[in-house]
Length: 185
Image (cartoon, rainbow, N blue to C red; front, side):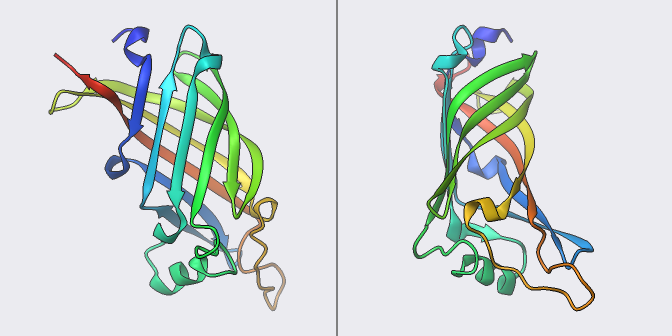
């Protein structure tokens, strides 16, 4: 594959991607979750990375931690308030290549109508034509954020000190993208 294979518009394949998060619970265990309803695309211009674009939308009601009671609490006004804020969005404002196959994507992350600039390191894990002739690219990355920066304030103090939910949340990205309008030949 050459660099030119990456130029163009790519659509995120939600069935083969994970947009997740992890947080400490009760200061002792890690709880992981993800959003199951995801849409997004990016346009790569490797000759002029400043012309590249990224837009991703997560449906907050699709939060899934494998625990229905916890998921309902995350959907409530204490956390995502899905009735008022049905989406989380990321709109890229800058893409930089830091070394071959590794990128820094800077953009505006909006949760609960609070927008903060975040920088996400992504590593390309491969480019391949799948069994159906579709050109795919894989990316992985993570980023730690403070949930209070996005209006996610709810917490409960623990009897012996500490809090129920950690202040810092790790965002986790495992992305499979398909080249738009491109079938390999």
